[in-house]
Amino acid sequence: MNDITSAELKERQANGTAPIIIDVRETWENEESRIDGSRNIPLGELPTKLDELEDLKHQEIVVHCKGGGRSASAKAFLVQHGFDQVRNLIGGMQGYQQA
View 1: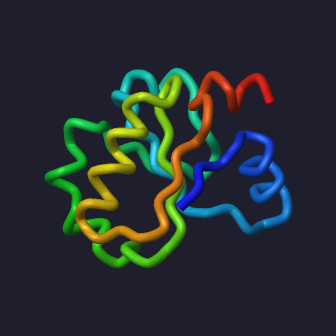
View 2: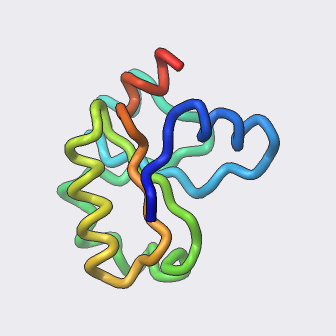
């Protein structure tokens, strides 16, 4: 699935059609700044949280981190485990804050 821009995500949040948003940054990073409605699951904890995410396998999920690197890894991991609608937030939190 194609990645998503900050502008598209913000537009979808504004019109009530936002996807599930997972922040794969560390907890302390999430505490400093976060996207409303996002769920924080640090990248290193993602493998142990798969059971909790099972019901989301066929729903649109946007993963994000600070700049896009960790979330690209999270996207690949989730896709490898059967999640079929995962998108990476282009530019991560930095891009989102600037949009």
